[in-house]
Amino acid sequence: MASMIDERALSKLRWRCRRGLLENDILIERFFNRHPDGISVSLADGMTMLMDLSDNDLLDLLLRRKEPSGEIDTAAVREVLAELRT
Image: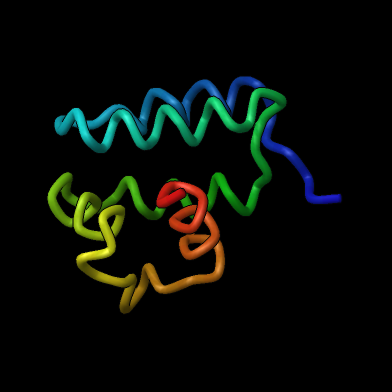
């Protein structure tokens, strides 16, 4: 079983995931609602990498206008994107 982040780290991550575009916020909130018992370290790492993007770049990834490339093309990011896109 994957190790989970603690409640404090989850709270910090949720705060960091607040975005300027409502569309991003809706998809991100749905992601967190699917994980009421917390998220794994891997998912948290992927989400953290995505939060370093601008709102428009993030939205392009979420809407499949782009695919991850460069530094953010990791298994963790792809796993988070797969969940965010469903």
